[in-house]
Length: 57
Length: 130
Image (tube, rainbow over all chains, first blue to last red; front, side, top):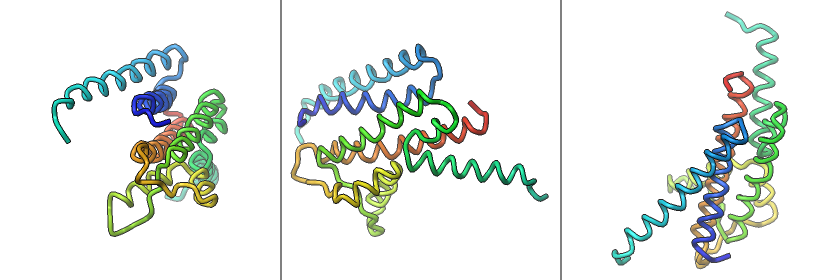
């Protein structure tokens, strides 16, 4: 498992899952909260990745 | 004012609950009858920790000369029993040359910090705040 994107997805999944279960009690609310957080993780990582693309390390 | 025997018993139970919740992720919620939450924590957090070890993350040492490393060590310790099992079995040495090293360290640290949040949640639940 060396794909950065895959690791990012796995990381986002676990963090979203735990936060959703902590923050909400109802399964529907957990699913909505976790889904939003998971999507937010992925979207922000991809947007930040493209924003940093022009800058050399 | 002295605490009553009932209050002392309750605070003793709370300490035990928090210790159990820290040592075994999800144990506090299982103790309180929140079975689905407890099972999710019991599976997700050790799995996240194991992935961190599998992709060659390092369990940070308690190096007092470097504050950030010490903080990472405290965060790693937050996962509880899996930390001691991994250390005893010789895992967590890390491989800084591995592409996934930084990810591995992040998985280990975040798994520990999330478990500390779970302990606080179990405490709040036991206190009737949730």
